[in-house]
Amino acid sequence: MNLIVFKSVHKIFRQRGVFFLGKRGTETRALRGISLTVSAGEVLGLLGPNGSGKSTTLKLISTMLLPDRGEVLVQGLDTCRQGQEVRRSVGFAVASERSFFPRLTVRENLEFFAALENVPRREVSERVGSALSWVSLNDVAGKQVMKLSSGMYQGLGIARALIKKPAILLLDEPTRSLDAAAADELWSLVRNLAVTGTTVLLATHNFEEATAVCDRVALLKQGELIAIERARDFTSEELRDFYLEMTGDGVAEKFRIGVPA
Amino acid sequence: MIIEKIIAVLKKDALTAVRYRNGFALSSLAQIAQLATFYYLARAVGPQFRPEGMPYFLFLLIGTGFYTFLLSGTHGFLKTIQESQQTGTLEVLLATATPAAGLVSLGAVSAFADGMLQFAVYVGAGIFLFAPVLHVSAAACLLVIGFSILSAFAIGLFAAGMQISMHKGSAVLWVLGSSAWLMSGTLFPVAALPKPVQMVSYFIPFTHSLTAMRLAVLGGSFAAVVREVEILAIFAVFLVPAGIMFFSWMVRQARQNGTLSFY
Image 1 (tube, each protein chain N blue to C red):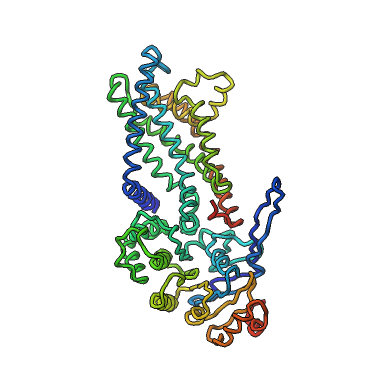
Image 2 (image 1 turned 60 degrees about the vertical axis):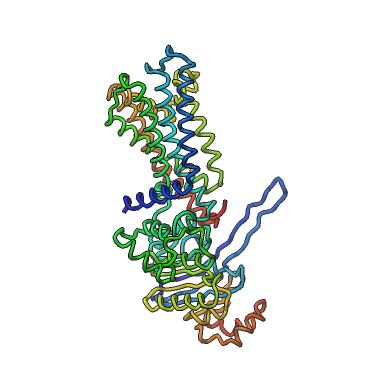
């Protein structure tokens, strides 16, 4: 069953001009007609350089953004018309330290978001505990968030997204501030979540991460879906080629067959 | 579920306020200073000035206390958005299962609670000094508070919507708040204003809220309170759906334009 469907999705960011300064408005085409599907329980990697549209894709699924053209369906629900229903099943792990309440403790932050996510009160404590266990943050549960390290923020962002037991988990560069051991831990967390039936979309520009963790990998470049293929079909040689040919289409052509029409 | 959310918001705001101890202490001091100002202002004006048949100090206490309650509640909506934009929590909050209008309303709960506490201190001071004059009708007070909150809720949603769209909702609210402060009978009776301005003041919900609250606290006729409450109800019927629609539309536009996280 396709849990997420993108049908020719376009997203354009417009910057208004300033008439008096003679400054013209600008347009950035973040996504250019992307079509893809993601199955239940699948881990899909969104791989591409900065500005390729990875985060925009995640934000469209989370309804933080709405498409300009095309359709995004999550569990058969249209994100434009049924955003509220979509949000109930999507957890977006935002790790920025600015996205937490700094004076509250880790536990207090999670309890607050649990209430907003309609978690029944009798389950809050247990859910917070297990979310913290998933990301190994039990030891700092009573610490004020402003005293955490950047790596801990990553974990806390994921814990917050897991509180509502989402059917879909969105991870935006989750290993950015993590050391190798912590990154390994996070990868096993993602695999374990997939085993329990959670669909995971992971945006990254780390090829190793994408191929090690994901079932399939979608290559994005300047808002276009260049290729989408099973992770095991990406050999390290080909990935290296992709790096080298990022500005060309040589390697991508090999995978174009995997891109939905 | 809504009660659990209200408790969660109150807990978050209370914990944050307590952990910013200095701010908490300073705002308490400011309140005492304001009470003293009103007292000496009323003394300077003299006992012969009895607007709407009550001592001027009492007039000021109820007018300012209730106006502050309504304005701080209204500002609570805007502040929720403004702070979330500044701290970067807005996108995350709007990605939760709680609807956007519900989120800002929850954010305003603390502001209303804080304003209510302040109003209670003012009324307490009034009771302490003017006990024989006061005939507080709790039922009438609750009625007035309820319908006044509805109007403040709608205005708050408009302000929050402006904040999302142009990021300068506080400037708009400041202009509106100052105008309402002048025209709604906070510091002096509306009758002191020129006729055309009095007409305008009639279309400000806060004017009716203050009149009704003074009647409720001074033991005015229940029918007179109900008359003002009816006007507030009419405001609510039009303003509440309009406020919800406006705010929801602005959030949708921000999602469309990708400006939710802008500030």
